[in-house]
Each structure stands twice: as structure tokens, then as C-alpha cells.
Image (cartoon, rainbow, N blue to C red):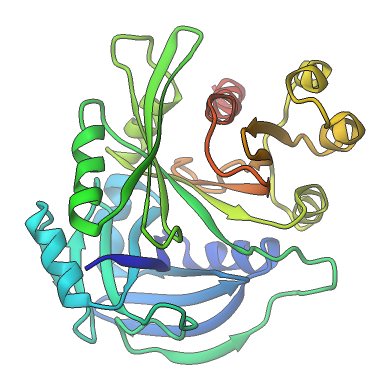
Length: 343
């Protein structure tokens, strides 16, 4: 009855061509298939272990008007689709019908839904079985230096205040996820609650955040306004080596957030053992965090979309398994800096 993997992430785009070109030319995705049905024109993109579906067309117009460019569907791979559907409905999901080939669709959080796709554990994703696809092969500009996106490390979700615990309970009861981590993070006059939930397979991780409305309004509140409610704030891609990945993706046109130089002045004290890497981290603006198992490195992109409703993260894990307060605070402060620059 559980989901064991993310089959694909579907992004509704107001400018289909520019969005596809962004992922192909900048992130090195390859086009694998196209589908036209039910007022939707879709292209399936692949890079490493990540599958994205970029969709436009008349059936996307209401979503785009209300939420802007963003994630509309996080499709789950399931061994028992009927059992997963029944479990989600019993936990409070709404049935949203079926995809073009009969794959059930249920509500998730905000306007984000989950298409449930039949795929056995351990099998390689093919063209997703929720619609009819025509295989294509538009290759990206791939060179030996092209970084590989190993997998979708986590999906970061922002929710309206007061809904966090209900949504967490839904994924625990409906899909068999477990609560992995929780943290209350205060940054200046702003604060937020966060809970991480993870599937039994460890292949699906949601970092779920809501603002503390007793504190000053901040970037989580602004995302909720721009997005017209709760939704996916960013996708985190796992890479083997983040510094060369950042430099290569920058060369391809990805814009990343800048980190104040003072951040690195105290980094060796905060995370002993990174002294030899600080110069390279500073050059690439990469952030660092440590937990009891090791450390991780991360950096966040600027949003390429007009309403700034979605951005991306690169993350390298050196033993680190979870999300420490420094990690969450680094995200919050990085986005806060971007907000101040844009205002």
C-alpha cells in the first residue's frame, strides 16, 4: 500500500519551450518522450536518476493563473496501485479521477496531486504508464564534464500556517511514510516549523515547512502569496561533487545565490575538518552543514520563473543523513538574501 519511489515530477509551464530549453541546455536533461492528450502537451525529460515532465496547454491554464509556473504532480511509483489509492483515500485524499491509461490520481497538499503509477520495486523507470507517449531522442549537450543528477534528494514543501501536522499525518497514514526529523527554526524576527517525512524505501523525502505567524512575515509567507497557497518551493538534486557541478552549471547559465564572505570566515570553527576546502567552497558560494554521521554541501539556484515560485538545490552528502538546524537555517537565510535583493 506504500509508494516506493517518485516516478516523475510534473511541472506546469507558461512558456513550454523556454522551460524545456532551460532544463536541456542548462541542467543537461535529455528529452525521452512526448505526449498530447486531454488539453495537455507534455515532454518527458531525464537526467541521471531524475525524471521531469514539462506540461503546457489549455488544461494547465487555471493552475498557472492561480499558482504560476510550478509543480502540479508528484507521481508515485507503486507496486500495488489500488492499495495505494485506497490508503490515500482512507487518510483523507480526494479522488481526482484517472490519467489517460487509467492510473489513479489523488490529491496531495495545496494544488499538488499524486498520480499513482504501477512499477515494481527495483525496476528501471520506463516511459510513465499514466499516459500514451511517443518516444523521442532530443539529446542534451552532454560532455565529460556534465554533472550527473544522481536522484531527487528531497522535495521542499511550503504550507500555510496551521496545516503542517495534518499534512504530515496524511502522508504517514495514507502512504506509510514515517516522520524522520522535526525542527523549529528561528532566524531573526522570523520563524518556521519543519518536519521531514520519508517513505519506507527511503526514496521519497519531503521537507515540509510552515511559517510561525506569531513572528514577523518572511520568505515563506511571500512564497505562499506568490504561489496562491501551499506548494513545492524547491527540488533538491543529489550530485557526487558539488563544486565542479556548480561551476559547470553556472557556465551553462544557471544562476545561484551568492553567499556573504563572512559566512566562510567562521566555517572552519563551525565545521572542523573543512579547512582545506573552504577556499573552493567560497569560490563556488557553497554552504556546509554537519550532523552526527558526516557533513553535506549545498547551494540554491535563483528561480528562473517570473513569479519566483520554484527554484532548485544541488546537494552533496558526505555521510550526512538528515537535516540539521544549520542546514535549514542556511536555506532560509539564502532565500531571504535573494528576497532582499529582488525587493
